[in-house]
Length: 269
Image 1 (cartoon, helix red, strand yellow):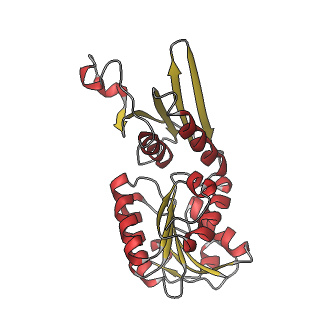
Image 2: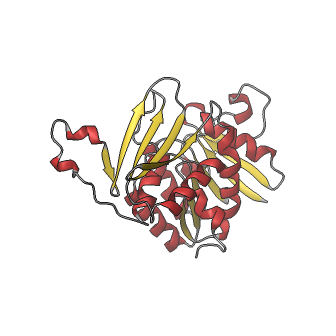
């Protein structure tokens, strides 16, 4: 039995993940973290029957007896929560977007020092993982690409965790030279997007989008577009998150990307 704490258990994805943990026969939801519901029973917070899961305001108060912390809060708290858990010898699964490559390097180093595992993904959807894996296969052969990231008008961070992770992972397998460097673009160079690990990333924030990410590869006279679209519910993220929960205790250090976890032949140590 893997004992779990979910940080952000009253949020859109966090609640769905917590419900998934409760329903899984091999997992136990021991505690939850949500500042606005601190001191209450999680089931009652959800508006149903009490389920015996206490809610605390601080991750440090929720880790007793926990094997894995699942982090679905906000980008300004996620790294602190992860490092707190790692320092306590607790494995972590990070689904919160907005963290940088430097943040993940710090978490990786801390996890290795503590001898615990961490899994982080900009998107825990299985189909998003397949899209990222496909893009990584293509990139060495079609190095010219750009990423377009679509999300709701209310999303506070840009680019999305999915797009940031994709750009950074692509940068690790191939580099590209722009025909016209961004710095030499006339007019409004910022219209060329943000340069992340050598790839231009454009973020669109409009009503009706949830999270959609596409990478456009191109050669003269031809293009290849790999795109992932998320629906209006958090259901797609639950299975991948629970897969990561089950895998994290068998790794040491950080595994970045659900696709890495799915296609690795052995635990990372």
